[in-house]
Length: 374
Image 1 (cartoon, rainbow, N blue to C red):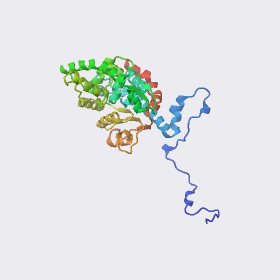
Image 2: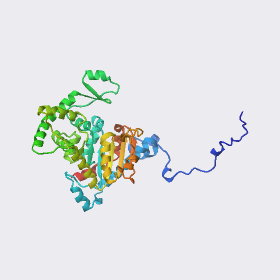
Image 3: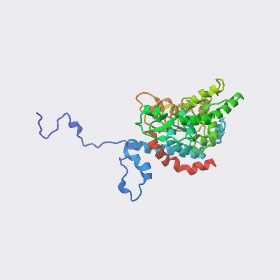
Image 4: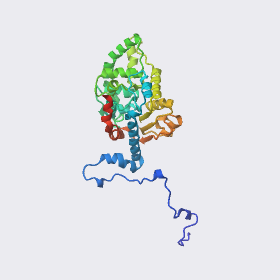
């Protein structure tokens, strides 16, 4: 039996000492959350999101750091004094209608964000040209156009797949679509494809970005992300354009023209996005979700020793080695993010935090962005 004589056993005595811990200078900020007792009226969300979150810890701190990183990239973009005449002439050599900028902001997102109400936030960013380049997936393209004709409905995650199938309803998380949505898209798009095929026969070459640009023009609808991308000359890339309803549409379209439909040159778009990266003075990456859209931007930025700023928002983990879950530091090892950059990853489902991030960053700079559009 232990002898409790008022002295600690020698084996654990080393845990007791009178020397103060030495925290590194960069880790000296005390943890402190938002105190509702300080509210003398409405909740001060500005203070909560831009100040208290930084010191709350866990993913709240990552959110606060993402706000700071987004502000850095925006301030850089809006400071046109950083552009030299050489920079301007270099960017004017791009083979598209392009306004020279001191910092090119690349934005990626997955299709579910267009299916969801995040579409309205992405449309807002395109409408005010707060972003310079977009990369998305096939669903992220077609569903923007589909929602100009038919609304997506809010369902639940627990609905029976068998019952939904029997009723011609498709579930995307807790969002509901139907085959009617795609029929509306096809009825609108087929006459446009007929014209595009005629233009191809006359010598025009289609790429994913040109295809999307044309549909953005034809939709002529202010609710559409790609209408505003067309209006504001924002190139939209989709390296997996055929992986969804658009691929189905092109397959069926060939039956109308004796096995012929438009050909889409992906390589030309790879050259264009690389060209934009190489002619940019600085680059910033705002990557929502994972997959091909995220990596397409990262891979392009490897052509210039990496992006200068980066914010990731996704729920993916890195243990399986897939790029979707890879953290920014892994991208540094490939030169996709500059080794001196201070990137931030927020582990969150995007729809939870995107409205809050934009409210504390891009929205505050709307007047200055609008001045550039005039």
